[in-house]
Length: 399
Image (cartoon, rainbow, N blue to C red; front, side, top):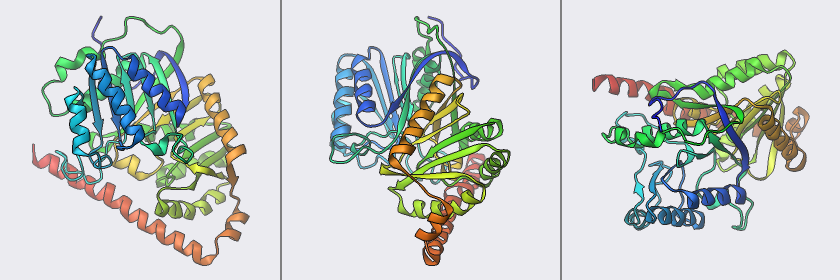
């Protein structure tokens, strides 16, 4: 094998195969199957890893892989996954799993309050990958007395996978000396995919001066000519995204938003409803998903392009968390995503019109929504711009 570049290219890779995977049983069945088939190495990076039935099932599969000689690297976020017990972690480590937390809150080498590893990434043997918004928890799985939270992932094989390996290695080996010894994992597979499906890797990490996913959304609003579908769990776009979205709507692009009707973060949902008036003003359609908690982060336009991953359309994803998306420029997968969204709109959503909104939310409720919006704005400021300045001052002082 020939060692490929050690730094990823952010142009489209060409030779790939992909499949859109819905969260719940479909996702976890595939994830466990891929782990069981692993022969060389596994990288699993996730924001939330819960020590519940789903978490234990995944741990059992990872430990079995480690015991048969597979190099297993598990990197959960140090803040969101801090409830994993020490005995649980010790059991995994004793089975051979290489475990460590991503730098937790206030303990980063870069002093950056609010910086989180928000990836949901699985890479197997440099051949198979899953990228999406699905955490390791019963909440995202079926069979636990409630419908799984609605979310998606993209299964990929081909040229994009070595790029994802390099991302995994960069985070795993940051500030360590063993990166060079692990670069063999980023070798190009011997068996190349002949099918053409352009995919590019996109990342957001303000500390590392990356804002590629935000740029992808801006490009979508600029390039769309017919229609845009966005499914977003915590939809509070910043002013630049709003400006570009409104401009797209004014030139006749039909924009449909699928947002949470049932949310796990009540404050954010009330704040989100405050901007419904801006949505109606710009002739954008909004639908609330009510079958379960909506946790998805996907978008598509004109039946030719789509993006999927961990990025929420708000300033936390834009300026604080470390995010990972894949952009796919292929009609088949874009139309598949659009079809799934349209089906969910028909079967599980309620359209919210301006008249419905005024009837449902009186003056005092709208005043409460405005208050929630202002609180969220302050929180976004604390988690992004203010501490962004602190992070750069801290980094410069250490030079």
